[in-house]
Length: 336
Ligand code: NAD
Ligand code: UFG
Image (cartoon, rainbow, N blue to C red; front, side, top):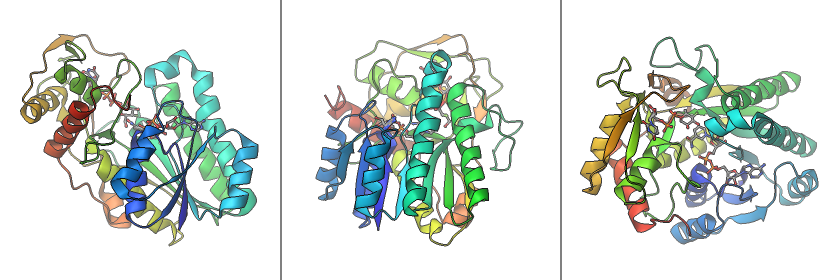
């Protein structure tokens, strides 16, 4: 099987390339390197002993995309490419819609032209907005609160329309909870540009001495210790979920959303303590005001993925923080 991986040089994409290559898939990556480095793919080859083909191009470059589909004989597509920073999406919403929605339209058109109709799409738990209760099931109402989240929901809707127009499409909408961690080799991991937006890379950069203190956004939520609770999932478990989804697409399931989470939530302070234990470093922090748009608590009911994909997360919080620390301490400046 030959898989096209869009955005495959990025954080989740590179880890998924490792699992695909290790499982014997042929892999071609298309990435414009707008938020990643080609070094990640060199390290994927180093880990697996196999090389993904790499095409440096924007997904919206229709000529390149058409030529790729015409020439390479892909069997399915795993689609990660997109912009993902919530705050930035509020500042430059049109860029987000153009890239995320426009890129997906270009991709689906190119796929349809050559009759490839198996697609695994990176959606997000952010489509649920602030849920009325937890754990969150796939049939809960969707109500994203920012342009990034809406771009994911719009794409889900577009893919539903596509399926209604032609029911030979098979599409998995993977709603990720909070991906963290790194490959256990320490060779690939998350390498954010500038100041990290997300908790785990921020904690890791404080522990390694790149930043002085963590700011904990609010300790007055209705949670066990007042700080926000999230369903952190190891990126290797997440990557494996894509292989399970690809297998499932061969059984012609139509279009189905799946939560990929562990089903267990941890607070910000629990993550800080776990990281301190794993790294042996202290992570000083200050409690500051809530971050606008944040919700108190969010974790998945991963039962549907377990039942239909035969997928559950194996790795726990200890592995998540251990592997993040290995990556961060061995690569303090990321791929530079
Ligand atoms: P990432 O930024 O590391 O990877 C995305 C990749 O896509 C990057 O390599 C980037 O260069 C590439 N890219 C972006 N726009 C492109 C375009 N138009 N053409 C070609 N390549 C393009 O992000 P990630 O954390 O690996 O996330 C992958 C996907 O998962 C994204 O769609 C993201 O929205 C989604 N997701 C991520 C998280 C998370 O917390 N990391 C959570 C939920 C969903
Ligand atoms: N937090 C801090 N300090 C920081 C960063 C985060 O206290 O410096 C807190 C947040 O307030 C929240 C928790 O840590 O309580 C997690 O925050 P993240 O920014 O790591 O993650 P979010 O849950 O806000 O959002 C992430 C991704 C979204 C994705 C969502 C669900 O950024 O793209 O998970 O998958 F949609």
